[in-house]
Image 1: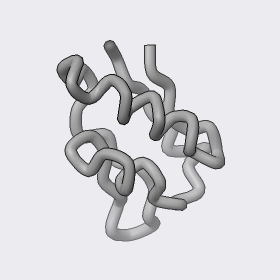
Image 2: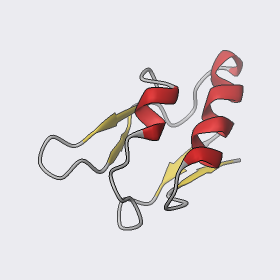
Image 3: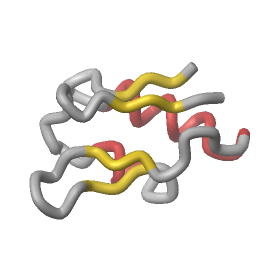
Image 4: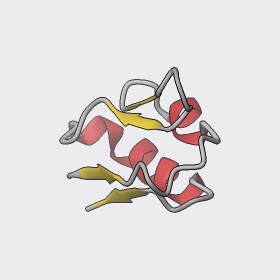
Length: 63
């Protein structure tokens, strides 16, 4: 699994961080998404997909 984020799309809602703080964080300056783990293990697959689905800006892609 690979996670990609597009910080230019991110609106800083923080849903990703609330969904899985081991994978996502927010930039202190503008609140945009910070990806902590590009290739997480299978234990994070469900939460990564949920974060992508919950993202209001569509800034997260899981493949």
